[in-house]
Amino acid sequence: MSQTLLGLVARQGLGAVLYWVAQGVLPLGRLGRAAARSVLAAVVWLEPSHQKARAYYDYLQALRIFPRGETEEALKLLRRAHRAVPDDETLHLDWAVALTMANHYERAIDVLEQLASGEQARTELQFWNALGWSYLRTGRFPAAETAAKQASEYGVASSELRLIRSLALVGEEGWVNKDGIADVVNKQPRALGMLLEFIYYIASIGKRTEAEDLLAALPADNRPHAWRIVTQHSLSADDIETARWSLQKLGQLVPNSVDGLMLGCEIALRRGKMTEAVDKAHRAATAQADELEVLEIAGRVMVLAGQREEAFRYMTSALAEGSRDALAGGVVALHMLAQERLDDARSVFRVQRSGDELACLYAHTATAEVLKAEDDLAEAVALAQQAWEFWDEMPQWARTEAVRQDIVSSLTQIAQAAVDTDNKPVSQDAEELLCRLREVASAPDTR
Image 1: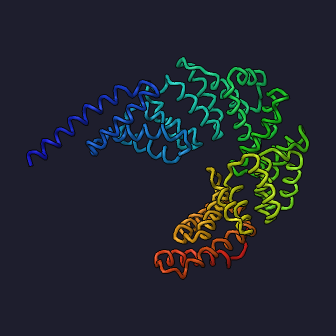
Image 2: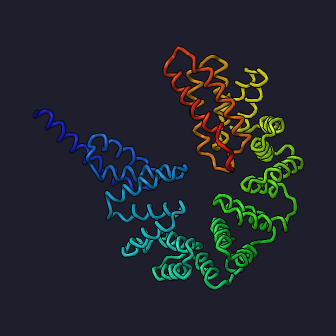
Image 3: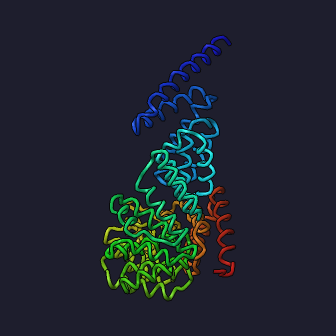
């Protein structure tokens, strides 16, 4: 017992020393944070009950994964870290900034307003940028202008704060300081992203005249590209009406552009206008027959429309141009498998491919069919189950009848082949998959 107690004391002592080492290197920039993260991992292993070590480890993990797109997990870690060390204003501020960057503006405002009572935060540029921007993106224009003014009272100034103040006046009074906004964007290129996001926002709340006036602050040569980005912002927010309006503005500047046709494809798909989407896809691909992105989008439209031969044609061309799209790979491989070209289908996946849920659905299904052809039914069923998970994750507009028929047919054949195997776990998994597929196959098309 005494040896166990001595071991515990030794671990706690070493953990305490390492914790203070981590605290010492933490402020030393990116390399310091990387070193601190490794040291804190050791502290957590030595002393799992060390709450502060766990909190700062969570904090540093969050800063590491947030830029990789693991947004919600990073926010969860930051929130947990803040609860454990609520008096650390740096950690608190980083959490608030992350909330702002993740578009959780209401929650960010709550956190930032708590920080406003502290002296440290009010001297930080990040604090005022995040607070002013969060106010802007929630329509609190007077509060955004006040925040920008207060920042200057604390000796904090930046191009972003100048822009926030100008944009607040647009939202509040409808007045656009074109020269001032153009000056900020010219001096600080990243301010352009803020401007275009705000243009989308005020257009989405009905201030379309102001949105047009704001975009007119940009040089004429840059305006078509700006309207493309506003349209993409709208689609990302699933705001189809604003997307249609901004695409119309793009069309007025550059009629029948390939970019406009491709954006029009997506808008038409989301509205269920399949004939229109197919027409625009063909026109875009005819105009730029060797452009990889155009070929991939045209192929995607044909997949959703059920035009299998056309989908295969476009996706084959995309692969020839070097596409790494999982949808292109899946579509081409399934077509080859239907022609009993197993080796050709297998070769499609010799390079790493990626894509969204629709892409993964087709790629996983094609790979499962390859495994079935190789008599590896256990792996085929496992991959078929994974493939089907992507169906539930796809947006409703992408679950077309053509996709349902393609995938249900392929996965049913795989599951049916595995039902009568001697491997009971595989057989049971196949039966379960068959039941799920039959439910979807018999369900009415509710799109």
